[in-house]
Length: 499
Picture (cartoon, rainbow, N blue to C red):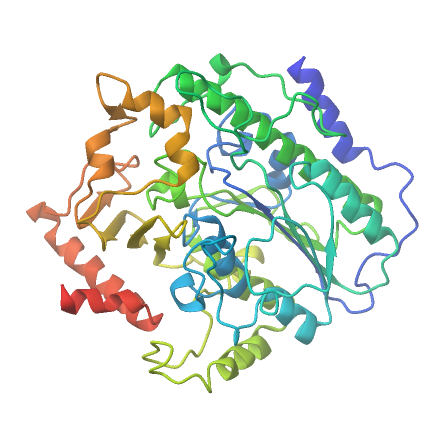
């Protein structure tokens, strides 16, 4: 049954018969179309192309075969709004102002003197900018799009059809599409005291029009090392797999629609997730499952098809990279510098004037040039919800990760939906009091510094921060972290002096 379903999805992607007679997009300008797909809480190891053969993602696997698959791509913040603000500005969230969730009473907002990727593309590149699905950033004046398309964010197939219908009638102008699913984020509903409620990942008995439900049992799921081996975990993973598969079906339909409208060849397609899987130990954490994420990039034409890239990149690199691909990065840099020119240093906690985006363009990697990428990357987390304050900073190199738990005196707080999860509640009831490879006590009460040898300890189980044999690398990474904080005007740099 599953094989027939997968074959059907592949048929959806490749069977673009009777294409509409629309000229190739942006033929007059020579600029590529740009499609940025952002899934909601999708872990890196939960795709077939990243090694999980228990989950059905044939369309994302196809996208990987058509371009580059990054293995060391990192979110800079393991929380939805904070991460998306970095994706769209190229600036760490401790500078752009979106420390945590923007919606409801959380009410975090970016500084109104900033500009974002769609604004740069529209004003400097002549792009028409479109968005559909999850937004989750503010204010709209900073994150402005020319057009907002409407569809159920839990139905990525309907989202793709809406986009395709709009693109049918487009004039020859390059476009930027920001396609953001609400899957596989946890859905509504509460977990009863002794039972699992099956709608926690947005799955509905009546389904979603155009989406073929995935047939998978809890026993078929793969429990990653950071999660406990419990019936509750497998039950939730089964629901999560269904939600991931909806994303995959939507990507398949979007690819088909681009091909039908003769837009595929001249489009850059980027697929990422904002942060890790919505389970304790991943989302809201800067451990690897929370910030090391899928990144698939198809360039125009046939550049580097099926290439695996181990270079370090992060989500702050996306805006400068896409601006570079559009040919407007130098002018965007000038506007960025001007936007900070009149901001009083003492009013915005700025120690130095901003001269460039925090991220760097990885266009050379997309074009096949010989480059090793960045020597290190960084993560910055402060809030998830307003009630979940736990600032952390991290520096990551090829082999090591240093985490600074700035509020280490506090117990680690939970996002409300993760605390309620059947997986966490099930672990709390076990005699072992273990959560994956960590003791629940150690997960909750963290030291000031955590140092991990990622090359030999990929699951981050042995803290080397107080190991004298690693004193040199520990001190080196601390200095790198301080330098990063000073360069990016991080308010929390004051903690080094005052505590």
